[in-house]
Length: 254
Image 1: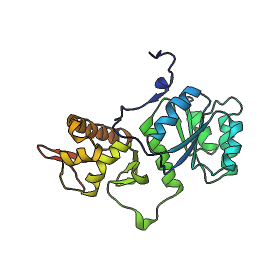
Image 2: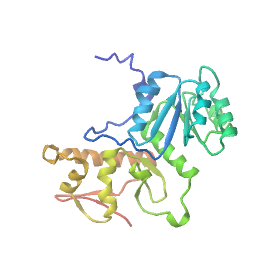
Image 3: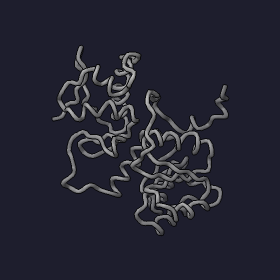
Image 4: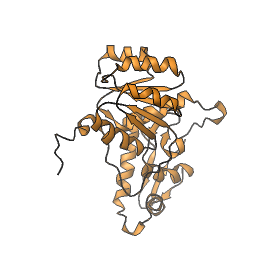
């Protein structure tokens, strides 16, 4: 039995309950380096949860370890705390920005006051998030930042709901990202590939599990509800995934 008081990360980091039918691929579209000195938060929460969203994640606990990591293949994004034991996070951001201009920097800290946010962004951070942070919001921030760092050519922009980052995020018609678990991505793939067509419940169940006979059909409805709720929470807009009674679901494109 785990003592709740000892397992502090749950108080710092919120995450919706996921499904464990599938293993998440180790392949990742983004290399993220986390600089966080709270061992439990870093190793028990941030690292495993971001890996579930398809990121290749490495983590360190001191600013002094950062320089060695920058001599290896560069991470795409560094997520860093401000209250580090050996160097102020603001200084780290300023040094990173001066040394590697193209790297993404996300500050994740308990210091939520506006003047700290202003300072962080002024020192070179691309985004400033306060703890506790929703895993979906953090993952969407990372994907959004990656898209700003490596924008698509105008000819390749698609103004419809679509999957991006090798299926690890859902993109709205305006290009805003919502991070997905592998299970959510598997459910959405046939719907996005067949817009305005009803996809049967049986076909969707086959998309999310290999053990269709043992799968409780009510879990499909729960998964759909979770995706709708996530899109509304992250983007503030309804997701046009509609139920067709007695048949299945349809993703409505206009």
